[in-house]
Image (cartoon, rainbow, N blue to C red; front, side, top):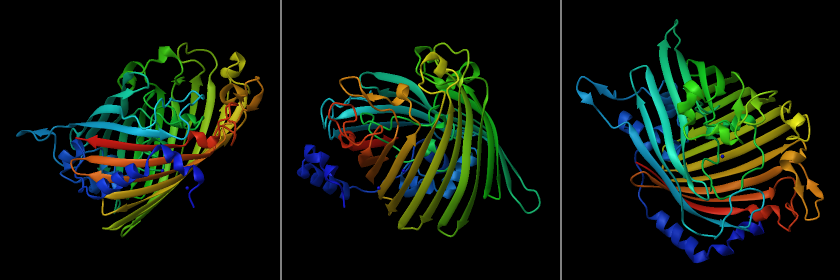
Length: 458
């Protein structure tokens, strides 16, 4: 999901008095309770499924609830009628302060520091349909700066069955989802990795592996198995989310270009081992995907670019009644073959690679406060077509995606499913350089941001 450097004071733009008032107000707020649809289904509080009651961090029970097809708890409907409303609503708003708001790298622009902005409003359906079938689906509208756009979010449909060979328990499931690693239950994989949220106005890393870039653009069919709640294995096949899978990419226009249009079916794999001992849980795993992607989603055809992603991850949790600690790490190596883009001049090299590292941890106190920190690193091959930075004279300064930074965050749960987050994101290196990253005198630290956000779910 990393003392404090001088540029922590982004923040001359955020008065000390304001920070003091925020901290005082947060300390007086009471504890939060349940999540929307699944909380109604199970009758459980937030903290039963989520570490510290904070979505999306999962506890052992939350992980098993997901793997068993969202089927635990009351049935949605039986002879007596409907038992609960299987829908919920999420929303988020906040304020962003930037070290230097004028960004020239194609990222969202902060036109005025500290201006309140609404970010998203999302509806969700989540329920066990039968004792072996469950579904989770989101659709929302998001602020794209400028304008608002509607689009589908995470989609996950599961059918499960338990077998009992000998003295063992074997859970077998069929799954269909729209985001590689979105079906996963650990917060070390890309879809659910830290930072869980971030300001949509703040710049992110200039490059990310293909396995992290297919959300709401792909649809899958897959099978998985969990043996004795320790050994897990999965194989899924992903294709572009059109035709039968079009509902998984609602609001997404491939014809507009700039998206990832998969050719045929592309394999994804996942395996891990986990062990629970008292309040302690450990996991060690691997995941990966082989993807064939057309250079232009608006005109899918001809040779494809080929991406082979290999990931390794681990997570440790200590879940005491008062103190909860989670440590996570993930490394992804991507081999790139630009078979389609290079002949078109859209890539400056026929081959390349990209490597990312995410080390993070969190501490939750009494399911009320959560403190998190992360170190993020990415580097890879030079490619001027993707990462080229030039000075005003046209001289290339760098062509590498190398970026390193950190995230510091404190969260406070409030009653009635409201969470307040204060997050600082800093960069030691951005897009290959520490200084003059755009040839106009900007430095890596000019991309630092402080973000105050309110998240609600009903």
